[in-house]
Image 1: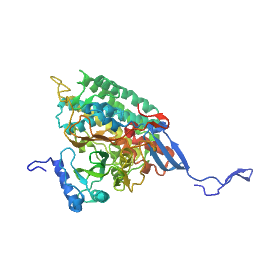
Image 2: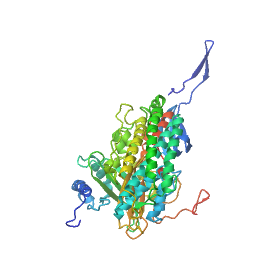
Image 3: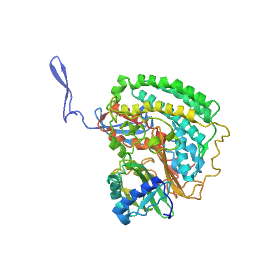
Image 4: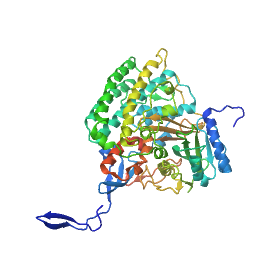
Amino acid sequence: MEEGRVLPQSVQQSAAAYAVIREQFGSAVSDFDANETMPFFEVLEAAKWPDIALFMRDHPKLKFNYMACLSGVDYQAEEQLGIVCNLESLGEFPHRIAVKVKCPRDGGSIPTAAYVWHTANWHEREAYDMFGMQFTGHPDLRRILCPEDWEGFPLRKDYRVQESYHGIKVPY
Amino acid sequence: MAEQGSIRVSRKDDNVVVIEKDLATEEMLLSMGPQHPSTHGVLKLECMTDGEVVTSAEPYLGYLHRCFEKHCEVVDYPGIVPYTDRMDYLTGMNNEWAYCIAVEKLLDIEIPRRVEFIRVMVSELNRIASHLVAIGTYGIDLGAFTPFLFCFRDREHILNLLEWASGARMLYNYVWIGGVAFDIPADFNKRVKEFVDYFRPKVVELYKLLTENEIFVKRTKGIGIMPADVAINYAWSGPMLRGSGVKWDLRRNDPYSVYPELDFNVPVPDGKFSDVGDCLSRHLVRALEMEESLNIIEQCISKMPGSEGFNPRSAVPKRVRPKAGEVYARAENPRGELGFYIQSDGKSTKPLRCKARSSCFVNLSAMKDLSKGQLIPDLVAIIGSIDIVLGEVDR
């Protein structure tokens, strides 16, 4: 963080929430990125993600009870896949924060958060459908938008569409 | 459930005749959709039924999947706007606006005041049009045909207005990054005012015709109740969340544009007319919201700055190339929170990643919990109350 820069109030609130998480989990989480459009931190030890998620939801000072969005992302240059979760506290506190979790690109897996927020169930299915990372412990990890027998993961940067699907020519 | 080995008998002249033995009592799989009028599009529900009772219903989606997010990665930023129209095709204006808010946040540009008011006005008009479809088709789902015709008659007026402003009836491409495509036509505000005056009594009429209709109330009251905490855990938003009694409206709670200056209520059911969280509450919120939208539109007309020297494209960037960064921005759509997560690498004129957080997709994800133990006709009532548009669910 640059010295002397005055952060907007919303970012300050996120930073305060982050401080509570940092205190509990130490080096398992990265430093706080205090940008103005989407302040976030990264979970460095993916295995701890469910614990962090539960802590964030239930801690009396955090109460991140609302997962607005979960997006899968392909970090091709870093050979990684990841998810970005936009969390906020609905009706309790005004703060909101984004959390990133990453995993290796080939055969990588991220522990599920579907038991913490129900909404993560379908979002994770969509991320799996589009990027192909596994969510360990997910109650029902199937494709959701593409057909069950579709080949490849469409939103990966190096995706090549299959030539034909059940005798139908695919690329036009 | 009949017990194993049960028999069905017929009595005739005091003689008991066994007409059926060992009735099958296992659960039956009933596929509802993808072509079914009550699913509002191409949605398939695989229901396990025990007689008339649904023991579980699993939604299958993707029939309308058009890879919106993949398209976004090959089109430049302004080129994505028309694609957003085609997500929730009943509320094109709101979709475009939500997307533009996200990109404008990344670009950090100031929007002219008149543009903001135009955006609010067309979005609220679109919100009424969308709620009219939701309410009308919900009536049809439950057997009330007349309200549907009334709703579509009134919706036609709104579509005519929006066509006049943008040139299209449903897929507008009107809200652009940094502005709007054209200024509203001369006398547009006058016509909108005429519509508001015309429509106010119609809202009351519709309320009497459908919302207070005893058959309708019997079909929806106490059906598909969603408690507030579970609704939040499912990240419900919009009328669905407010139907569960949570006063949460992004126009108030995460204000954008000129909404802080406008005076309107956020209707939340109080439990007197409906049971909080049931299908009737969700319907009620939509019915009451139309009136609030009318209030907002009227305020827009009176507060909108004049058109002298106004260029609707003055803040539209020639080339959209945001600095590297990420943004998650959202807006209150008629169906809930529509959010866009956009990642920019700072070099390209195309987003690195653009994810649309669809309100219908999230609202529908609770279907499995909501349908457990309901009767099959009530399942229709529940799907209708979620008010899904499959174009947005599947993107």
